[in-house]
Amino acid sequence: MNAKTEQTQITAAKSWRMWVVFLLLGLAVAGILAKLLSLYWTDQAFLQNQGDARTIRTMLIPAHRGVITDRNGEPLAVSAPVASIWADPKYIDLQHPYLSRLGQLLEIPHGTLLDRVGSHPERRFIYLRRQVTPEVAEAVRLLGIPGINVDREYRRFYPAGEVTAHLVGFTNVDGEGQEGMELAFNEWLSGEHGSKLVMRDRVGRTIRHIRSIQDARQGNELQLSIDLRLQYMAYRELKAVVEAHQADAGSVVILDTHTGEVLAMVNQPSYNPNDRSRLEPAALRNRAMTDLFEPGSTVKPMTVAAALMTGRYTPDTVVKTSPGTMRVRSATIRDFRNYGDLSLTGIITKSSNVGTVRLVMDMEHDRLPRLLQNLGFGQLSQTGFPGERTGHLPDLRERQVVERATMSYGYGLSVTPLQLAQAYIPFASDGVLYPVSLLKNEQDSAGVRVMPPGVGNQVLNMMETVIGPEGTARRAAVEGYRVAGKTGTVHRIGGGGYNREEYTTVFAGVAPVSDPRLAIVVMVDNPKGREIYGGEVAAPVFARVAAGALRLLNLDPDRWPEPRRQVAGR
Image (cartoon, rainbow, N blue to C red; front, side, top):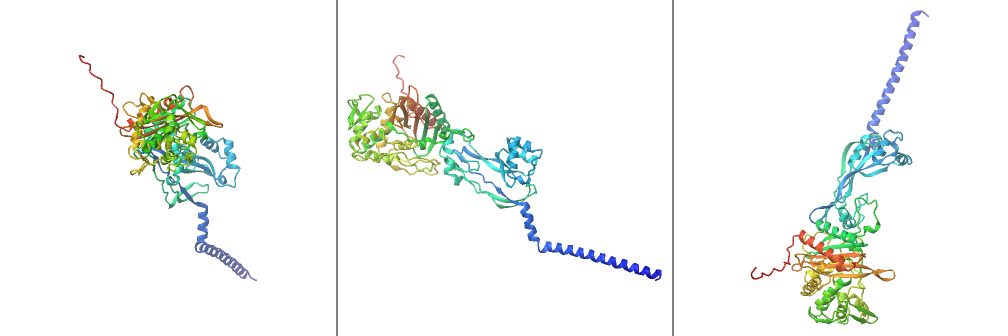
């Protein structure tokens, strides 16, 4: 074979191998193009879904809970923006240098933080701290720790603190009502959370907002009937008397006698809803609506009203109370002393037990219980407040003579301070009872007549004598105003019956007499010391509360000092 032929063969072999390489490269390129086309046309939806599943998230848009205000628009409960810090353990590096700083910001010991995020690697969501301030949240965000996330939410704040705590109530950390009006109107106040789609990176940080799915619907506003000015004033006076007499508890209720609206409702002891770290369960109760007591002599005006309603009595009708005691079967009824003959007005002025018993024994056996029932005793006030109690009004039979006798001066039945305040409205409205409301009324209330015209006014004028020189509540007088009311002092009930050493003191009254606007009840439970009677403990509180309320509401004085006589020659 010559050299030329050999060279030709070598060249042909190289050319063949080159074409083989070109063919293989062409096949590879074709395969890649085919795969790309397949991915683009056939698998695009699948790959897009897989990508979205790893980067697209639905984020909650928290709703703003409705504001609670007083009747004048003053805020009682508001929601402020805060943040929650949470962790995704899958992305957290336990050796990250900023974890110690994170623990300092969240006030979590470093060891506790590591244990919390490292002991559950299978979990994808762990709260580290709820409701931190925006400043703390921003500091956490700037740390940029993979797996540590910041979400916006709201925290409930109560500007009036303990002053309105029992009425307004509070929410839990998730914004759900737990007590008071927050619980009663939870659905009304709660908004509806929205949602949106966001894109997050591999460590869970939000990098882009894609679109909104549903807008958040904010909660509705709730306007209460109370006047925050009156609430502060009543709370101050109640707290002072409870501390001064070392009492166990106390309540004050102020009602608008024209509408039945609650203008103030305060209790002791109270609590701060903004800081419940030291909360005691006993302080949670809205005692004005949940605690029961025997109303004692504050029922006597109702007994006299029942007597007037028979048509056989007038305010001047004389009743014999000598010798200051009387027997009713096995029971002995006693007055503080022998008052002799008393008119119906005198029975209220002197607070005669014997006098009211003689009146009730001269009526049909169910006349007084029917009147008390019509006044709201033994029934819910229909305010919707959680935990409200009905009290106890016994259904007496004709043969239950002793029970009828003790009922005439307020024993053997039980009420709440709110029920007692409502029962005094007909004395201020000439026999018309208005329903109680914790919400501001947008229209006039419809009252129900429970006494014939004239009876309520007559009893109101009788009760004005209780504050006079001969009455039992001279310390309830208010300078510049005519006021009327009735004291009550009852033995507390213990495990073995009545405790002769412990008392509940009450004063229920109306002001001003010439044009009644307010019904006020003051109850102080178990005062200690030398002063234990309603005229000594509760009546002065009534005077200060009534004086403050009448001036704050700008009601005209109706009692002017007697003009001094001019002496001739001077």
